Length: 238
Image (cartoon, rainbow, N blue to C red; front, side, top):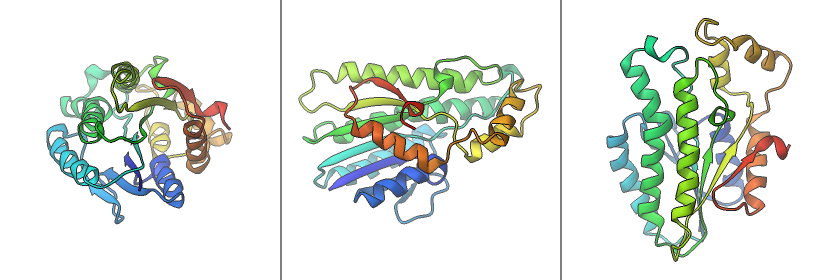
């Protein structure tokens, strides 16, 4: 059995990846607050402690079965709130850090606890962002979380080097995708995000790639057998 697990797989790139891997015969587990398919498991990564119990239960159930190949996509994320962090409510700041950073670590940890001893190929794919490498005014929370998780993924690769059944890890930056998050970015005030007009232009000029195109590029990257801990740009594959 081939298994694909993904956070935030109910829409956008996540939904496209779910569709593609389902066609390839993978059993799907989609983790989100909004998923309503038969493959969906309701979990809120903005509430890491509660999420931990859900993930432990679900991953334990999956690990009890034989697996030939296991993929985990850390895909859930939220750029909001945009703007000067000191101007934002504590709950909004806390929620962003939980979804983009703490929740991602909880997800990866639960996966490794459940599947580390499985003698089959295992890969954790972190869907990252250009924001992990470049600071962007108004995106301090998102930039910090994306940079932190990328480094976390690279460090996990080092820690897995001598394990008898290693988990491989890969960072993939998907570039500009035509998703609801992009629409949210275009709707913010310029005082919160000085580059908002650039993002309006990306949509107007047709610079946003479709989720399906990006999903297929992500799959091409993984099919190339990338080195554990490596970073890849979808733009190099489309």
